[in-house]
Amino acid sequence: MIGFTLKKLVGALLMPIPLTLLALCAALLLWRKRPRVARGLVGGATVWLALLSWQPVADSLLAPFEDDYPMFDVAQPVGAVVVLGGCHVTDPDMPPASQLCASSLYRLTEGLRIVAANPGAQLIVSGYSGPDSRSHAAVLREVALGMGVPAERIRAFPEPRDTAEEAAAIAPVVGDRPFALVTEASHLPRAMRFFEGHGLHPIAAPAVRMSRDDSTWGVEGMAEVKSERAFYEGLGQLWQWLRG
Image 1 (cartoon, rainbow, N blue to C red):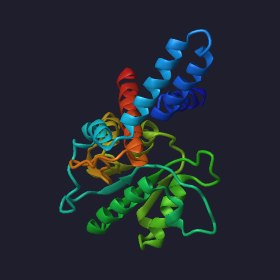
Image 2: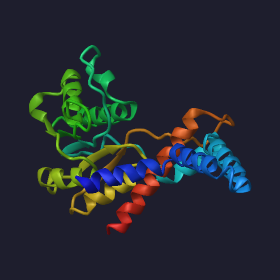
Image 3: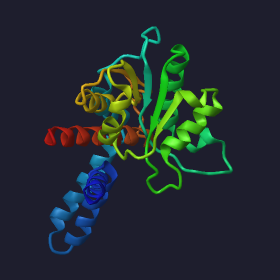
């Protein structure tokens, strides 16, 4: 548990905005003793954040993580559809689908599209609760039930906290069957390696691609989100490589 929490904490600190804030805090501490260094930190942090919030830069950073796999072909038969966990916030006053964050809703929607084309396929959803009162798998299952998927076709895994744990937990269930592995396009290269490492036969099913080939020239918050996603996956792949 400590290792998992430490990994999440370090990863969060290495995202673009926290790094910018760390640089600005360092500048404040050095302002009186090392004013030239402090001004350099302020200027560098400003340029850094501006570049990462500029659409052409953000798209160029994220695209290499998203270009490995095409859209899933529903003519490809599969025995199971695995929708990896994401994020949600439980709110009993809102419809179940609106409790999912956008990326998780994209994942589940793509999973349901593939399930509809494969009447005999099992829908597998996963994800732990984190700080929430319900597991992510439970929310995904509730939305799938509401969309007409029979309960007997859904298998939920509420314990896995990350992709490595998801692969380990789901491996005995899918066995040798080819299955669709649904997550964001940027997450698929890492996710595929985790599942293939268990001797499984996943078929990539990208749910959403955030980068664009025809970038606008705006400096926008969405561009920073793309840059953050690129940093997240880059760090994730580095950690995966370090762990072998």
